[in-house]
Image (cartoon, rainbow, N blue to C red; front, side, top):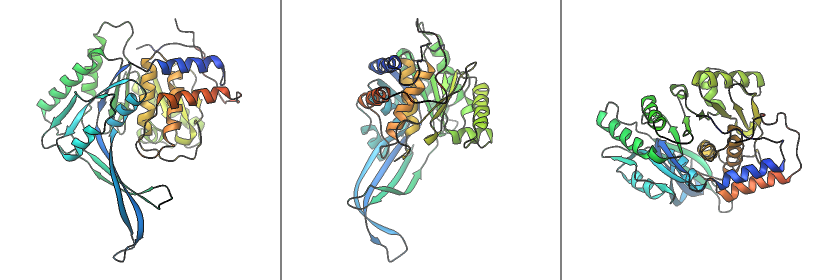
Length: 369
């Protein structure tokens, strides 16, 4: 797929701000399919009562429990929160966690493509958070109850493939969210890529992949968004503040995955965008570097990038909007989302300020036709 080419003025330039705001306005009505591993993110809140006499541990007075969609579910929720139509394709258990997970999706997420299997336990990550009456709750422990997709179940594999193919029939973009539970495979993704290539569209449909443990299984898709730690794990290198190491690593991922773009997220160091034949673009973190919670931030980044590309953005523009969204969501606690109003405010605030010197400006690209 060839992504739109667009003008990228210098930071602070009004034309670029208007362009980004126009892209946000185009999010509404876009149909995005999110395929991947569903996780129930459970949050148990309590107040610190005292130290136990039985062991040197805190006793918490229980307050409440909340379940939110994690994994691919969080990516779908972020797509819907940004004003688009999200269809979630994934495996869900017929257990209590699965039932509560179904009820927790954003109203803009279509759940008709969820595949329910008897005997399958919905992966659940339980976070216990504690604090005083007037203090923010802090995570003290996490308990993971994980269950891989049944291996070798050909009937289930065919069912998921048919469901996914039907879901992408009239979509504007596909976001693959692979958390390593076995639902997403290169064969399934390639099957969807072939299905989309066969459709008669004026422009090709972008396919983005976010793979936690095995990114290089997926090749020749539109783009991917690994974080720096994932890149280090894939290549067996250390990056830290070494610009040369980052450049080599980003280019290696770009070449080996044969993607049109690789967006490496670097936490407080911002992001780095790699495209073949273009110089690397380093994007500083938006907002404060005093991060409140990074839970699910990668899903927000990928959902925003997906919507921007589906709306006609270039990779650079999509990366900028994803950076704004990521900077907003890490200041929220728990598995959170970003609204179009919040994203618009971030863009407007940034472009009202006087231009600051950046280490690199955006790549020179021709105006959209």
